[in-house]
Image (spheres, rainbow, N blue to C red):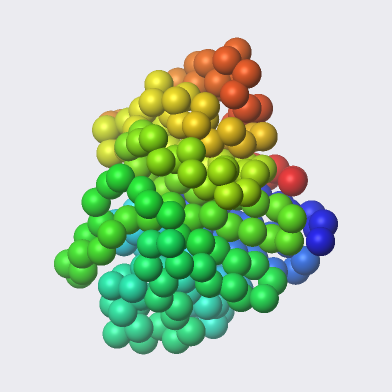
Length: 229
């Protein structure tokens, strides 16, 4: 089933995915985010997907879900903490698990990183493969480059991959070029860069490197910018 998907970059690693009047938020870190494109109180959500529990990804999840009633998908330990915080409608898959909400589904894939929430809950970090009908996105999450990033595309073609490029806490723009080669997506959207001094990088150089190698088209979004798929 073909449908339009609007990808809105909210700054840092936060995105809003909008299709058929429904919205998925990924990593809704808005309060305290110097690049936030909108305040947390003004974003809508029908679902929130969380790759891991660090503060700059978990962000405003609790407040947004309590206001909107959004369903939340997070790995089992993080899901338990959210439930204990009063969040309802929490789904708790583990790596490899899929949650189908009817209008969108999400599968957790491996990522090489760490994950401890501000409250101290430790969990395994994840990537996300998100499907809206025939549109398929791969959020690599915060990760180093690793060879198994090639695996999601072996199962199903990836239309858009969201890759961190800032270095220091994740892979840098050079390793992200290697990730683009492995993932074989049609398009790459860079994220997790230029929010704070340790992750400042040259996004245009990343774009040139990927496109000159023929790996993918790179879509650079400023916070608040959108891309229609």
